Amino acid sequence: MHLTKKSSYGLIAILELAGASAESPRPASRIAHRYSLPPAFIEKIFYELRHAGLVHSKQGRSGGYYLAKPAETITVREVLESLGETLDLVGCLSGDSNCELDHCCPTQGAWRQIDHRFKKMLESLSIRSLLEDGERSR
Image 1 (spheres, rainbow, N blue to C red):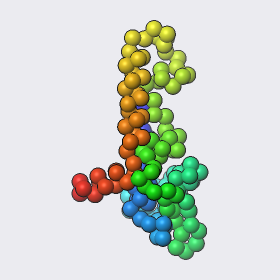
Image 2 (tube, rainbow, N blue to C red):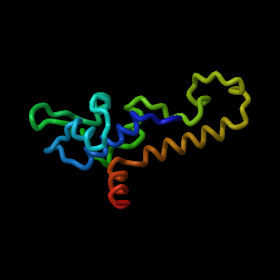
Image 3 (cartoon, one colour):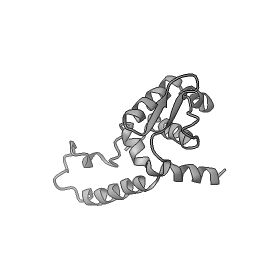
């Protein structure tokens, strides 16, 4: 697994929305400017998050993006997967492995167990908990 800038920026963007209310949507351009991120890339990320049902958009002068559901119900895993990230820790777990040891690897069971626990951990982390942890650490 290798997380991309897209997933990092996506978490930044969704955390920004978690800190706002639906009554005051956040424009992608404001988030991009605040963190010196490419505005077009942030728009693309919001497009994917919107199609995954994680955010809604509001058009117009006071438009922008806001969370589609409460931040405590959105998990880190859900965000990462909605942005197309593969969360398999090692390639042999994805099912389309080209590993020559796939049929006899002594570590595959261990990797499967580690991978399962890692994904469960990502499922247990809500966007709300990340936001609160971030606020406490400041």
